[in-house]
Length: 480
Image (cartoon, rainbow, N blue to C red; front, side, top):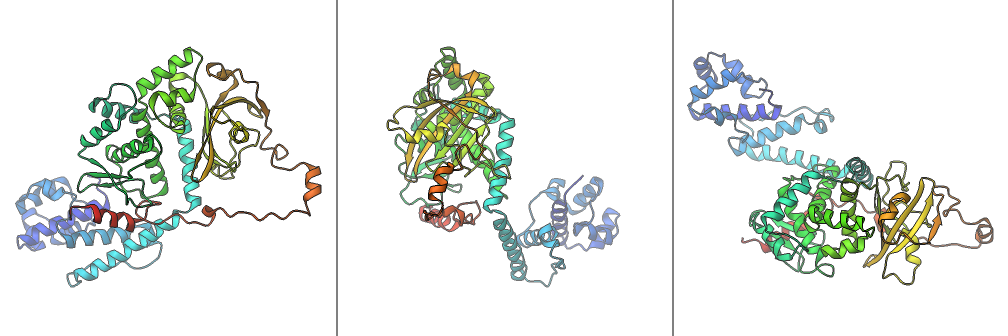
């Protein structure tokens, strides 16, 4: 039957439950199924996997259906605690400690058993929290970025799911309305509720018991964020997400819900039609794509990376760069040499000063995109860069392609050109020798400490979310 140790433990507890409920001893039941009581004891203790014929005989002798024996649910709360204790004591986390296992006996009280299980749960929580370090997150994010690069940043299963849900909600064309998003939620048995006291560590909170998705009352201008956040919350349900057990799982889920939201806001069929026509007209522009679907510039740029390679036969790259030159997000499948550390992580790395992602900050007029060709050691790239501002400061969004793909884009005629030799430090990282000689012993800057350098990842059931805040919030808004 190839059942796991946990399955066997549950099976054994269920057999014991039905046996004792009928007042039978191990020998009594063994006599009826032609099996020694000692052999039955091994089965009940989860140490031996019975044959299917043996299980059928046991079920018949106990007067229950075979499916009742094979149920994955513990027969009672006490059995659930015993099964969980056994699972914890068999985990590598506990066995590596070299401590003996504790076998629950009839004389052990439920409180004592619950205390043991509680200690194991806390041990597991502490271990999980310990690995959720910035280093762990960076490694997990790097692995995920490589996986998506291999897939050209395209997830067909989620594309199909989004098209299916949009069709069910009656969406045909144009920008996705808040009303349609509400209908999509209602079809999942969920209601969208806007509140002023959402926990600061959560973008939204879903109350599964009462079928509600709580959202902030306002977001960025135009409400793009509210639609996206609601769609992301629905995606958790549609994609059958469970509580993440690692930072990698958390990041994977975050990627998937963001992808689903983008698919709904910019549906594949309509988006590909729009972009294909623009390519035929040699007039591709992220700003037009943005305006056609009523989303943010960053959302349109990211969605373009999902569709360009698969449907337009076009490799490309995407960058979000902070005003200090650090790379916040990045993707490429066109060979652009992104800056990275020894682990392969790109987040927080400083991009070349010559790239348009940074030179765009120097412009006085930023109402339109900056178009620029940049010669790099990997070849020449064309980029379109748009800047923006948040409470955290300025940022730039860039979408670029190799030189031979620039012919499809508006702005290809630009004469703005730069040469980057990064990662060669003489390109833009090492100061000119005359300046260095003049100021080396005459300057003493006081460095600004970035808060995230010393901040651990917040602990909680979900990385970055304060459980206390979320649970207090739900208590305030639940029906009691």
